[in-house]
Length: 99
Image (cartoon, rainbow, N blue to C red; front, side, top):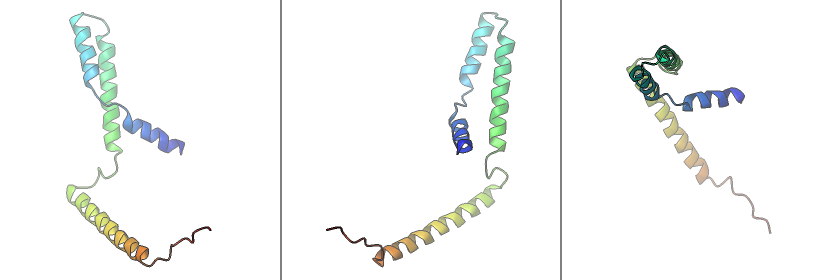
């Protein structure tokens, strides 16, 4: 469960590069020696984004394969919805009311 929580936090982490670029420009305007540090932060953020992309599920599949998987999953959902409606209609799940 902790691993799932850590993955969720990583996925919801801000991946915006604009604040880092803004900091780099500010350092360059001030002729600050922190430019290299800010550039290193940007490089690190880009590398993290690359790693996240390479770890995404389905990234190794072609668009055609992804469409086929999507069609299969939609068919499964449709079939399961039909079964659910069928079982709902059987009234087997009626719970007796307490008096």
